[in-house]
Every structure is written in structure tokens, then in C-alpha cells.
Length: 182
Image 1 (cartoon, helix red, strand yellow):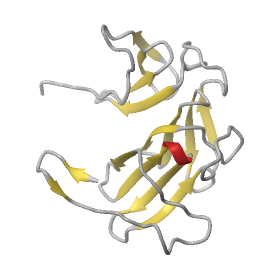
Image 2: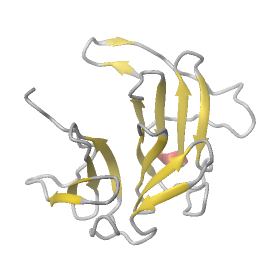
Image 3: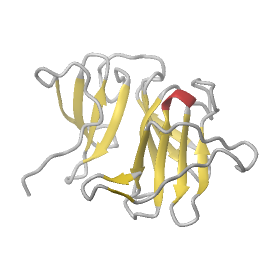
């Protein structure tokens, strides 16, 4: 992970050996810092994994998915996009090929979701066209990006959709963030 604005590396994480049995770390696709600044949320889309890394100890404290095996059963992901840690401690994962937003309690490993697994059409919150991003907005809503159909949605995590739009000239909406002049 790096601090692009200051153009200096803050942490280099190379952990290919010495991981506990059952843990894998290969090639991160996306890395986000948790709101409290203590953890990295790492998505490995090609390897079907989402990991939480404690910055202080540099250890993987949580991992979800089955390495190199995509799927929709409990414990599996299919090309996970972004993952963010919510204020209540759950992980929110945009599970692209399963066409769902997955909510994961990292303590109990219980999941819930928005979207219908395997139904990849745009009708949020019951169906998503391959969601690949979910980012918080200042007002508590989230921006959800959908690959199929090129959609960007603003909605609450309870499923109330405020609006959906095809951004003009955008053929692949990905990793949308709220931009403000403030």
C-alpha cells in the first residue's frame, strides 16, 4: 500500500512464506485502509480471496474465500471486487461473478447479501449486474458500481436505492468514489 499524495511508500507487505496452514497471499488486486487506520483490506480477485492484515503486526488476521476456487457456496467468492470494513465490524464485499453484495460477520462467519446469486441483471437491491465496487458516501449511502449495463447506484445498505445512472461516456464503471468541493 502506498501514500500516493506524498509519493512515499508507507508499508511493503511481502508474505509468500511462513503463513499459517490454510492462509494464502499471492497477488493483491485492491488494497484499502480501514477507517481506523489499523488494518489493510486486501482483495485478490484472481485468487478468490479477501484478507484483513493488521498493519502493526503485518499478520493476516482474517481471510475469506477458497484460494484459486471460485464459487457461490458458503465460504466461497467468485472474483471479489472491493472489500470494505463497515463501522459495525462486518465486511462488505462486491462479489462480481456471483452478482451480489456480501455482508460478512468476521467473528461468526455469518453472511447476508443484497442481490440474487447468479442473477446478473440491474434491478437493485434484488439483482446487480456484476457489482465491482461499493464505497461509502458522506451522507451514509454507498456508491455501487455494476459492470453489466454500466450502472452506478446510490443506495443504503438496507437496500433503499436513491438513484441509478449510466455515466455518460463510461463503458466500465469501477471503483467509484464520492468527490466533493468541500
